[in-house]
Amino acid sequence: MLAMRCVQDIKDMTEDSLSAWLTSHGIAAYRAAQILRWVYHRNVTEFSSMTDLSKDLRQWLSERLIISRLVPEQVLTSEDTSRKFLFRLHDSRYIESVLIPERSHWTLCVSSQVGCAMGCKFCLTGRGGWVRNLKPAEIINQVCAAQAALCDTHPLTNIVFMGMGEPLANYRSVVQAIRMITAENGLQFSNRRVTLSTAGVVSKLRELGRDVTVNLAVSLNAPDDDTRNAIMPINKVFPIDTLLAACKRFPLPSRRMITFEYVMIAGVNDSANHARRLAKLLRPLRAKINLIPFNSFEGTDLKTPEEARVSAFQKILTDHHYTAIVRHSKGGDIGAACGQLRANFAAQGLTQHLGSAY
Ligand code: SAH
Ligand code: SF4
Image 1: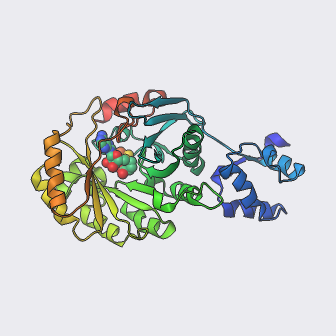
Image 2: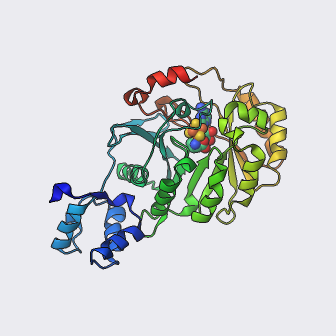
Image 3: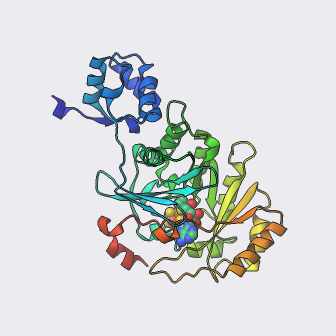
């Protein structure tokens, strides 16, 4: 009986698991690639559209598998043309993704969790706490939905895991999603154009380097443990020397550098002294630095530094021969800038948590 059957989401399956499942039912393994190409190259959401499969097979598959997708509940467009998508998940949780315009392409900033457990003091997502991990399909579907929404000449070529959540705290799903995003029979993104950003979950960094080839961004945000402990609780578990040792071992795509993100907060980590210590600290690494002036939000005492202070900090780094770029986040007017994603906390019953946790 159909109602009793366990229906799986094909977007939560790898090519290997799909072909193993098909062969266990007496269907040729090569069908897996054929089906995945319909799903990911042609964005088909019904088995009935897969015209090179027999009618019986299409019917059989549609009784056992679903092809999920995410349809944005809201799309906000910024003055700078970035677009923020709000997605409602099957359990009424919300996540957000942001499309960022570049000169010749789009970059999509994807979420890996609903909320985040890391509790960084400068991040609105962190303030709401952790709700749950996303499934591979929920990560992949953010990319599919953004692709479907783009109908202009600039392609979506770059993916950054810099939305809501700490990707290395949802390791299995994130790695599975990255594999499908970069797979030949998947979404076919170049792995040189996929970047994972982490607050520094060192215990997973080594595994990540073994399991997939991706660019790495590390949210460092301070050049010493005292400063970092004050703003990033994870530093008490994995202090800076352990983090940088893991970064040094990380196998990057060829000729790539690790990007160190540095959220600049007035009076906390933005002095000339901090800049000089940062320059010294990163010397043993192939590092470039993104300086992100703190994006403010309601309920925080933290302040954005004056522009002159940001420039002075940047100059010290460039004088030390680093590539150091000031990243003024896009989409600030629509709440899409770094650290501003909150995805309808009220709807998730997190409003109280927000008030009481800090
Ligand atoms: N959890 C991962 C990825 C998501 S956060 C990480 O922390 O790296 C993505 C980036 O946004 C991080 O570099 C983080 O330091 C930055 N960020 C968070 N809150 C911010 C804020 N209020 N202003 C500017 N950047 C912020
Ligand atoms: Fe989580 Fe990253 Fe925000 Fe820290 S900065 S709370 S790790 S999403």
